[in-house]
Image (cartoon, rainbow, N blue to C red; front, side):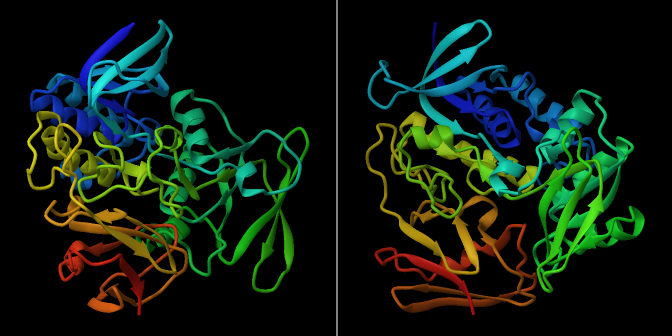
Length: 429
């Protein structure tokens, strides 16, 4: 079976649903393809409050937020197909500029031809195997997503004593989920000298939830054959090891984008984030293919991802309607006329920067922010921007640099760049 649409949105999380709602409201035919049984993404099983602050100017629980975004997309006229797994790219037959996707559904295989594609496939946490933590292989070892799926969607049970690996914002989300399931978190570990999450979360978490946080500590072994019995942790400052009895281990954070479809398309990829390189319009290296949300900045909050979806609407609309020369369009409807871009580079302690390319005259990036991912803590953030050996901006920002969370730089710091110059480098002075 073949379907033809103006825009195919791959992924039904906050960024994809927000993009779909905006594009459908603008009069385009929009098809959302999501592999889960229900649209909404990770918030569907994050049954705690804190969602919707930046995009909706309100605060709600994850499931309520997911339902609202899905309903908005449907009400705007988008078609949302769930249990629809996009397995690859096909050869388009609908003319120049068309893109074709192979899709597997419970009803059979589907081919979708679209004038534009928005990749909104998100990111996932690295499991224990990817982190190469040795030991036995008992049940009871989870990621946050698996934990929330078990507890909130399937109302399953976990153990009574848990160790949470990681001290990011999502780590405290895991603690709340464990608490709801009747499981006490006996230890949270972080390999960094300071916990990664904001003090607004870690301080009350330690005091009210009574969760001890061990910094400069890593899990070196998991024990137990038929069930988790303990973890062995090492103090990275002294080398001392101790055994912590527990029956559940939750690996949190350490994000990697769900980039398989982007790689299959042959898109230019960022080696630091392993995400597709996008410009300030969120266009990728392939005309007519855009990428949004935590696929391109793994990982930021759900509302920031949703604002990516809102940002991309006018650029996809400009591409599909062929309005060449539209500020911020990035490309013309035929895929020609793409403006040259200036590469953005991140210098240590930053691992990656997004967007990775800035096109002069294409407008500001989402929220007028450049996003970077740091690997170490800096209490004072003295940001330096250089191009071709010339310093074009320097500013001390009023927020610290901390691993485990996105560091935001105002895009206005790039205003002094030469549009005909070489790559722009962002570093700390």
